[in-house]
Length: 146
Image 1 (cartoon, rainbow, N blue to C red):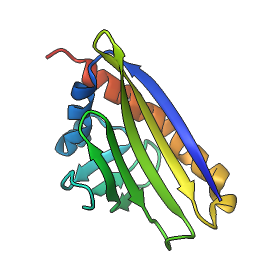
Image 2: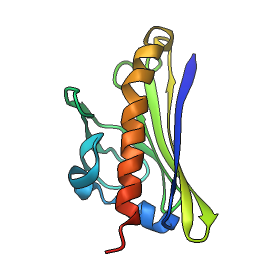
Image 3: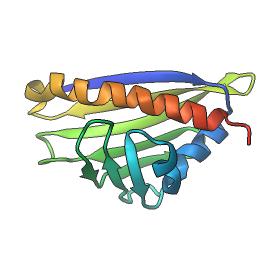
């Protein structure tokens, strides 16, 4: 069983600029309202160290494995917060050039596993608004002209 939470936003900056913000893990604490800290090497197969803490929630620590690192195109990781096969989450960011130096960010999460039917509504509620908040913050950061 699986389901996907999908969000997107138009950003008035080239995909390379948006990628530079996404790839600067050390700066997440200064702009990201969802992932409050991030560290690790952006190399496929390696693990990141993330602290997920949207406003009003308690911090959760994750160590997802990077599945795709394509600068200016895609960042994707797989998290297993429990037992693989029972509950997994694949989190990804895709950048699509839109012309005139802008791009579209698709920021999605695919949930799969045997326990998804029991957790679907709770997971949708837990990630939809934080994803949208992160998208807006990423847009603001990438569109800065300094």
